[in-house]
Length: 220
Image (cartoon, rainbow, N blue to C red; front, side):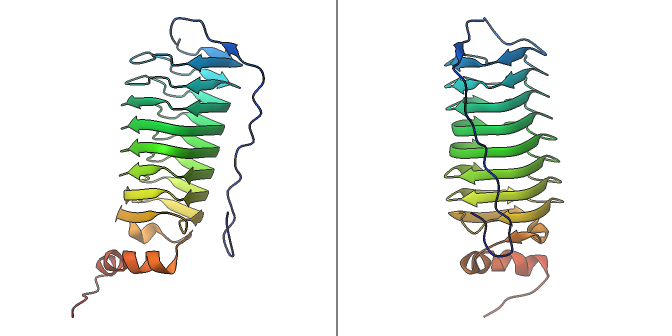
């Protein structure tokens, strides 16, 4: 997408090889998973911290309370995954498509996301504090109270995406395109929008918040 004065995000270009069906029991800490298809696997409560997923497809998998801190997900597709309280702290996602996910309270603080497409689905209370997002597209999804506190966003696009109650406190934005957002609601950190591009109508919607941030009283 992009536009005048803003660099568009580079999307992942995935060409998965022929995949082998995962027949293992559960995940293992520091496990190495290459060229595998995980179909409707139940990983609830399992510990796969530090694992590496390369050229994999995870479809319809349950990730409730799964411990996946410091995992590396590379050149992979996650479709229809769901879960509450999934721990992905300090994870690395590179060249990844996340489609139609339903996640609540997912912990991605300190994570690194590069060339990631998040399409469809609903992500509630996503914790991206101190994360680094580069070439990330949120498309057609609903983000409820995402926390970008202290995060760095570069070449990030929001396309037909509902952004509700976002926290940008202490965040750094560069080439962030919010013009395509279906709705834009900033709960905290509106002062951090420097480095983002918004539309005229979005500016009008944000005017009360901006006035409050600047200490301007609006009457009449």
